[in-house]
Structure formats: structure tokens, C-alpha cells
Length: 156
Image (cartoon, rainbow, N blue to C red):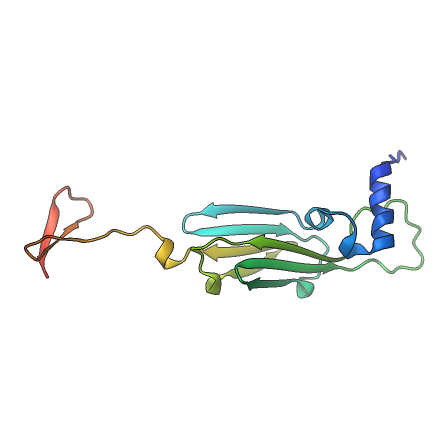
């Protein structure tokens, strides 16, 4: 069996034990909770890898346009095991993401499948592109009819 020794990883582990998981090393939470974020049509999708985490321990909050994801991965408590290598972080992890304007935060949806948390964040109706009707000075309203190059004229 080949074991590699990384002095920086060992330093991170010791610092985490001494100072606690919450203050270990900047970026430790990001490593424990990697995520992808992309836009698809009129909503954003966030996938967060949480392998080995009990879905009941996951908490998602939005407060003042900041999305917070908290999760806890419990350590194995088997007394009869002798660890050879232990790289999966345990404890409580948190990610915060600042959200911009134009999102409908009341309609955020969350699902869980195979250790992946998926959040769907829709755009607010006011942020979606829309067609503006033009009213002529003679009181008639001009709207472009889909599939037609000529405007339809209606009386207001």
C-alpha cells in the first residue's frame, strides 16, 4: 500500500483539531461543500455535493438576499476501527452566497437526490423580458402580433 504524505494537509488537520472545525482554514467549508451554479432559462440552478450527509441535517435559509446552506456530516464512532487515512471532513459546514436583485426568493425550491442538494431560484416577474405596447397619439394601441411583421391596431 502506498501512502503519500502532504505536510500542508497534515497542518490543516492539526489546525482544525486545535482551533475547531468552524475556524480551521479558510476554504475548508467550500471543499466540504462544493457547488455548481448556472442559469437555465428564467431561473438559476445550484447543485451542492453533500455526500455522506443526512438530508435531515441540511438547512437552507435566505435572509437579506444572502442564501445560507448548512449541513452536518457526523464522524464514524466505531470503536473497533483503526484509521489508515481519514480525509472526509466531519462536523458542520456552511456556505453563504450573496444573491442579486431580480430573483423571486419566495419561490426557491429545494430537492435532494443521491447526496446532491439542488436549489432552483426563479427570476422575479419584474426581471423577465417583456413586450411594451406603444400607444399612438391618436389613442390607438399598436402591438406586434407574433409571426407578423405588421402591427395590429386596437382601439383603447
